[in-house]
Image 1 (cartoon, rainbow, N blue to C red):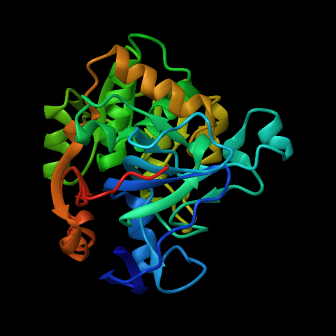
Image 2: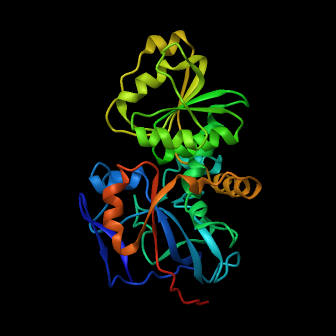
Image 3: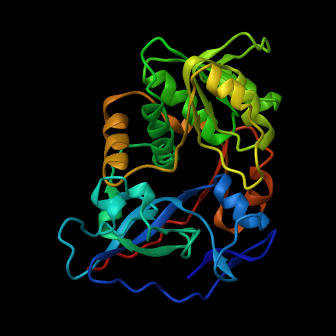
Length: 332
C-alpha cells in the first residue's frame, strides 16, 4: 500500500509497501479518493508542529469509499461514499459530555497525534465517516472539513444578516470563511497582502477592505495565523464587536488592552468544530444550498506528485488537493 509521509522536516515522500490497515470492530476501512492540504499539514511538514514519530503519514481532509466494515458497525456499508471527520473525540470526558468535543482532553487527530489519511486505505472510527451523495463533485467533498471549521467560526462570532465581517488572511481557510460569512447573510471584506489571494477572494464575492483604520467591523475573523496581523485585526473591530481567532501561531501576538477594554471587545479562539453537530450541519448546508466550496481549489496533484503539492501549497492562491487512484476492491 502507498502513502505520503514526512521523513524529516521539509522532506515529503511517497512510500510503498506499507502494511494494510486492520479494521477494528467499531471501524471502517476507507479507500481514499482525495485529500486536501491545509496550514496544519504545512506546519507539520516544516517542523513547526511536532509529530510523534518519523516517518509520519500526512493529511487529514479526506474522502473516499468504504471497503470494509467492522463487526460492530451496522450504519455503514461497503461501496458507500463518505467524507472523514478527522478529529476523534473520546465522548467520555467532561467537555465531550457537555457537547464541546473540540475541547476533548483525549481527542485523537489524524495527521497530528496519529498517522494521517493521505494513504490508499485507512481505518477510521465508523462514527467519524459521513455519507455524501454520489453526484457531489469531488472538489466540494474534499472541502467539507475546512468548510466545517469556517461555518463554526461564523456561528461563534454572532454575525447577524447584513453585518460586515473583516476576514484577515485569504489563504484556503480564509476563503472558506468568506463563503461562510456570505452564507450567513453577512458582507465579507478581506485583508490580504498576497495579490493573487486577495483577487481570488474578490472573485468569490468578498470585498477588498480599505486601509482606513477608522473603518471598523462588528466582526473580525483572523484566519492568517500571522502574529503581527492579530493586533491590526483588533484595531479594526467596532465597539462592542467580536474577534474570532482561527489562525494559530506559537509566536506571541501584541495586542492593546486599552483597545480591548475601551471598545468592550470580545476575543474568542475557534478550535475546529464539535461532534457530531459540526459535520452534520455542514453536509445539510451543502445539500440545501449552492455554496460550492470547491471553488477555492486551484491545484490538483496525483499521488506520485504529492511532494510537489506540499512544496507549492504555501505559495499559491487557493487550495491544493491530491487525487488518489480508484482501484479499491469491495470486501465485507
